[in-house]
Structures are given as structure tokens and as C-alpha cells.
Amino acid sequence: EAGVAQSPRYKIIEKRQSVAFWCNPISGHATLYWYQQILGQGPKLLIQFQNNGVVDDSQLPKDRFSAERLKGVDSTLKIQPAKLEDSAVYLCASSLDWGEQYFGPGTRLTVT
Amino acid sequence: KNQVEQSPQSLIILEGKNCTLQCNYTVSPFSNLRWYKQDTGRGPVSLTIMTFSENTKSNGRYTATLDADTKQSSLHITASQLSDSASYICVVREDSNYQLIWGAGTKLIIKP
Image (cartoon, rainbow over all chains, first blue to last red):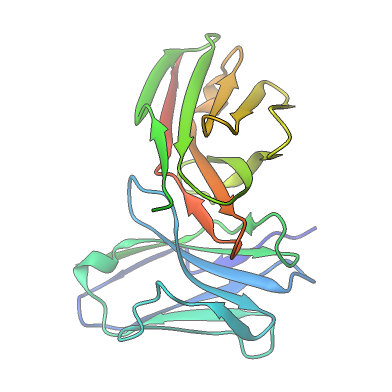
């Protein structure tokens, strides 16, 4: 069974630039999550989708972050414009409804 | 406020030795508790999950315990191996809105 795929694995941008991350969940998983993990901390949920609908985006900084899952499969997370404090690893996870979450390898973002 | 606190923040032990990691939580109402292992540069991988009625669960050399009365959990690693070097994260699911509360993790380093 293929795991959660994410790209790119690494990205370096300057502040005020924009960036987008892509996630392909495990086939058949209805629920998709985007997390932000700052070095030395646990993951923080940014947004949770159930199929193509948003379940929880309470911790998503909506003035600069956006996410979509148009066909209920792949998802993209965008940051525009980026700030220095956005430097982190962005993890995507998927699950069957409310079950165990399976994580991708993450995208390490460095904002200079 | 729902919180998960882990100790120690970091730990260095010699290969072959045992160790115990601690997790205290204030999450209520409680649904379940998971321990994840996160290798450097990878996403978290689930080790164990325990519900309210379970007080111990093993996964190979990993044994997790749960005391729901004192709201404490521990992860015991037996006969450590170099591949056990990773961050270990405790996660508690709240039972009202199914929100996951993540700890900051314990960084474990196994030295030969």
C-alpha cells in the first residue's frame, strides 16, 4: 500500500514570497490533515478535510494561509506572503474517517 | 485548558539499556492516548493506542502504560537499539470534538 506522498521535500524562499505544498493521501482515505511542526515542538493542526469539505480550520492563519482539496483526493497548502516564523516542517496526514492517521515525510520550509 | 506535557525533553542512553518516557495530560473528556515515533526528517508513526479501559499495551520492545485516574502515561523501551533514536510524541484525543492534543515530544538519542 502506497503511503502519503508530499512534495517538495525542501523549499527555501524569501519572506513575502509565496509557496505551495502538495499532498496525495492514501487511496480511499476520506480525511486529510495539514500540520505545521516547528523545530522542537509537536505538530499543530492547521486544517482538516473530510472528503472535500473543511472540518476544522480554527488554527489556520487565514490572512496568509489557504488550503484546498477540490476533488476530495489531492490537496494543496499555500502561504502568501510568507513570514520568517513560517519556517517549519509541513506535514500531511490521512485517515479513514476518525481512525489512525498516516503521515507523509513532510516539507521542510525555510523562510529567509 | 487541554494540555499534554512530556518529560524529559531529551534523553541520552547507551545501546542496550532500558528507558522510560513520561506523559502527563489534562485533556477532558478523554477518548484515547497514542504514542508516536518520529525519526529525523520523517513523519510520525503510531506505536500504540490505548483507550480508557486499557492500562498497558506492547508493541515489540515498546510498552505503553496508562493510568486514567492520575492522567499519566509512560512509554518503556527495552534493550534499546541505535534505530530507537527519534522523537517520541504523546497524543491525547479529546472525546467531545475528537481534537488531538499533541505533546512536544521527547528526543531520545541512543549511543553505541
